[in-house]
Image 1: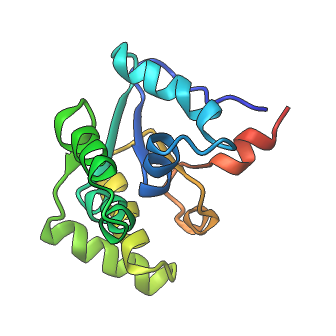
Image 2: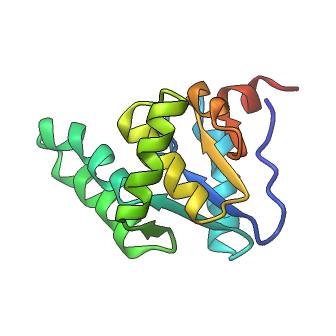
Length: 148
């Protein structure tokens, strides 16, 4: 299994999938992600995401009336060192351009535009569609864990 290697002081964008894999400890992904969370706690890297991640992570726990999981996501996203970036009009305009030119889905376009606006060093996801965004340094988690 490969490892995530972030340079010290890296600004890492995590999309909702990565947050879900981490919080719910998906067995295929959590071992590779755990070091990222340790680096965040040690202030070696910074993590950012869009406020949209709050919506995306809460849907299933709310459907399942899983109050504890809702609280876990809210605590992680609202009370930790992860920086939530607001969805501004500029981000929405940039996302519209990405939808029109790269053909991303609306939520994905918002995530990409947010990461670009924040000048993130890495964009950690498991969605290969982000590779089509030329200025985005997308790291696909499946590719990381597949490497020796």
